[in-house]
Length: 286
Image 1: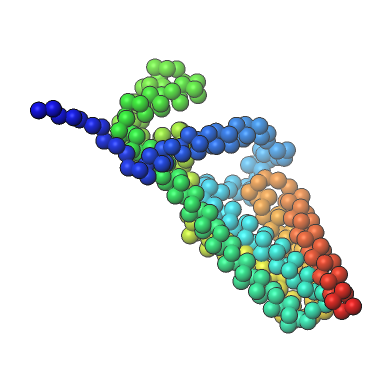
Image 2: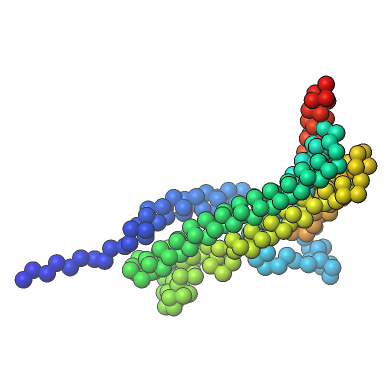
């Protein structure tokens, strides 16, 4: 009796993921090559570390996407709603209509930002989880090949061949450690923090956008006309300066320059929409 032994095949979804893995890894390698061209920016380093008042950013603060979403959220809220409000103010609309436009812009933008962040982070997380799933499958189905692959990675980093093989063998003894090591060394993924939280990013983006969008709207709750425009522009400009200065705590750049850069961007958008609103208002009246 003839017995045919066939090797277990991977599920169709794993095969599809495996076919995409070279492209994903090639993209990651291109990004890493770009990062090698970066040079340290000018600015004090040792002086900041010696300063007791200086605080280093929390470990992993920018990895999960929550902090990034918060910064983008408050900045987008300030700029987009200020530009929208100034456009209506330039068209010489009533305070009631400006308030309606500002509230609509706040709600629409906050929901859009929250939903967009959730979808983008969710898709990113699912792709990375799929890559980890495939790597775990290969560690079980081809342990010798994965061991040699890990040893080769360490050799390329300058570790002697015998030491690289010994290190890879030791790390491959525990399945959890092996998967964590391959994720970091081969895929460039931090399983602990690199996947990010879609829900946290969405909530952070929603709240910060709403807070930012509320700032240029507040003066029109009490004033109208030119007084409302001046008050809104002043409070929005101050907020943009403050947010820009806060981002410097993370980037190490000059707080003044970061604040002025954010102010210039926001002011440019507001001035352009104000002038467009002014032109449209005059043409409609005429």
